[in-house]
Image (cartoon, rainbow, N blue to C red; front, side, top):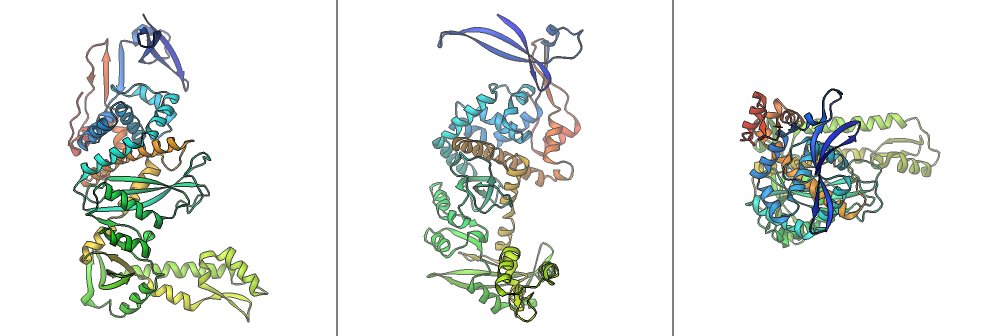
Length: 507
């Protein structure tokens, strides 16, 4: 027996057809609901007439589903999560299209054509997240399959970001260096991405107090498990330590890694080459910039590594101006202050100047703050230089090209935090953190693939990603009187989008 019911959600009234049936397994009467549509405000329209016309958004769902098929992402998820992959994909699509909290998924589900996914209310989503978060073996299998899908991998990037949280019930949420300068505890997220495809490969979660440099060893161990030992690893200088360098050498992992200027050996390299590097014989052009380059050898521990020394005269001028402006502003702000004792100055220096304290000193005669000429000259002498190590012989273009494309990892983090509502962990258990991070990662794969195609096809000149979704959601599937569903007409703009991605919209 079937009947209709009304449900009010955020002031809107929705109609559902409810059918009673007997569950033989549970030996009890149960009900199943079918969404019919929104109830019109006009009193003259009969409810029976509404059930004859159902129209749902389809273009966005089709678009993301086809991309997941082209990447073989859908096939891998079906193999690893055979009982959950439809719901996983639907939640991923919701995360990309809406980037809204999960308790609103039910409303979104009702307005979109999701033929294979069951309807999930807020409690059901919480239970689903608990299930996915506890399936660690399946998640690991996914990474194994996904890594093979992206192979062969030649160059990969590794970087870390912070995800802030208000929760006190998550093991990894701790105080540490917050990259967004937020006064909140955090979890650290390390992501490995592929240079060739622009897609994320793998991620790891770390406690918020863990510093970047200590995460490299075990990350490399995981890469070896995935048979990613014969690759070139590109990292930022935050991962530099003598221990890490030698560990990479011992594991025969090829790498490119910038070195911090605080190292004595690096200071000596700058001093050694500063007078001769600007020779016309060392000049070359890169992205319309004139750079100067010299190579050298540096010894770290018992091993020798190739050192690539770059100098950008234009960048040196810019850095000098920015730095001197900052110093002059600080001096102007505090130049009239009198410190009757050095102890008072030291307290001021620590509490007020902080990291900038090394650029100033105390004048005993005037009892005032003055610039520290020696330290300022040391800093200025490094301006315009960029120095990186490599474990193998590479030319100046290759090293610079690989490193400059490292901003791919930063764009991935930006997408997580700004495009997919991932800058806050709005969960209250460790398993929910594991599930949310895994789902965000899957969404990130699709989002990165869309970004890459849009860049290759110059679509960003016409659309943003959100504008593409806004356009495609206009494509709807309509069912009238329970007849065969049909698509509404495809516009010229929608065809341009589909053509760019090599797709043709169909049922």
